[in-house]
Length: 616
Ligand code: CUK
Ligand code: CUA
Image (tube, rainbow, N blue to C red; front, side, top):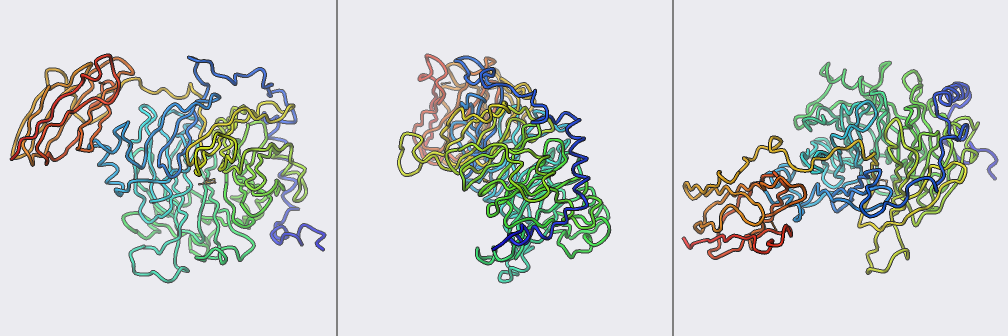
């Protein structure tokens, strides 16, 4: 029989707890003075009866929630607390209602980013300034093809995608706070470096990298290669540390080999130290990117300021997130019932980074991801138990050993939650009212719709510490939200019509309509408005390369047109004051009725124009 924690769990024996327990307790007291009341004070909590749970017809929600769409490659925008889906934003795949991937600009963007027809979005993160949402951008990863995309929150549309060199399986995505200096792409799949076919058979040599992307230019500024895989990532609040989880410290390629050792790592990247190494030229350039060696025995990890700290945690950690006060990084894994609490402040001084582990609360089976309410509580999904567990962060640090004491409450969710996200949990000042549990299975919760079931995103009220968590809503969702960011509505200010200054396409007003021809190239400039296009007919010759520049000249918000061309695979959405351009070859003689696909007015059906292709 096993009597002690250290016998049950070999990892536990390796964590030196004695010396820093006192330090942990002291900083805990400081945190509570700084307003981290939670159970200590409890006065910030509000009963469910006193908050808006129902959004009446015509009323607005309090929050935007940006949910990833997994292997649909898109982002979905929900209103909270209604959980109404307000918009879908295509990112890595074409989408016809928006004409995304149909006009020249967006199809070139998708083509330049690798030309793939899909992506796998997991982690939508919204840009911050001074640790608060600034309303500029959201970023999201593509796990399938190693990419990162930027969504412009003025227009709620994807405006840049970078195909990250040297990285396969971009999984974690996160901004370096407080001011979004970088967006990090976290590479999950280990591959030969460079992955050019020279070294195929020796997995020992495979590596993965994190990529630091400049949010303004979407340029990859540098990368750091490491031992083991990486998985999720989150940044500290002070601009120094960036954390990733990872599995496969064994450097294996099969599942059984990947589970042979007892521990894996959380890696803490010392960003300013990495920047210094790049500055000093201590890198290899690979595919145009400076790649810094952050493996354990690299020279850059040997001095007094290692660029990457490898912290031993229990096997296969998955989620990692930094507490709102920036004090702790909390990681938890699929295979171990505990979470690991890492004291960020002590990391810089600790000789052995394992000394920075200050808590190992025992939470339940399959703890995956953790969110925060700003009142000192953490909420962790339990994938196997199908629950969300609420626990007290300081109590976990003060507990003298692995303990269930910090656990306050558990609520059943339906079923098998992956991520969960609380309102503004990724900022320094979460709102502490709503939490969404993104459940992978819905089983029998909804009307059956065939063998592919919807998932179930459940809205839970967490604002009342006395009454505890309350399940408020089930929301069926299409595969597959992984993570979300919840932003107060007043922090975003989306445009109602386009500003032509924001784009390169030439605005075509009523007096600018024109058809010009030169050497088999035809340029058609026209507008759209209720209920006409700038030309009633456009005649070209078989084989002509046709470019159409079309402006929606409406000023009125919400009056959209499109130009759809039958049998040419074209549909261009045109919101008010928006101009788009499309180029195609008119290779089949005949008559094609170009029409508007948005029902824009009573004469919408009449809004069409003939494309006449004369035989050559
Ligand atoms: S991951 Cu999917 S449930 Cu990509 Cu953050 Cu954990
Ligand atoms: Cu324009 Cu219908």
